[in-house]
Image (tube, rainbow, N blue to C red; front, side):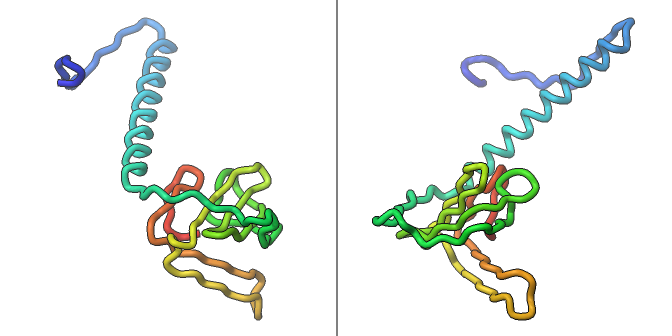
Length: 143
């Protein structure tokens, strides 16, 4: 029982209509309802696994070391996320051009890998995290 009411399982529903448009509209409405319900369940399951992080403590003088024109994977939103990486007292903050922020605390970093651009096109900074964080809408362990 949920909220004092009995729960029932509906095995089958039958819809009849003389117009095909109305049946298609009912079908689309049921499909979107199922889709939003599944999305809500997966979001709730992802939120349960997350460990609450402490807040980022910004640099005291306000002039944190930064690297500009940096792209991050996985992307925060859209196809490509370019922005600025700032080093603060207890972590780094990546801010996209759309003003979305991703905070990674030093205490949550398990491994940090730096690959210089010797015989490579890219300079790579890879962070493997102890506990996953949400970037965009997905949970990730690697930034």
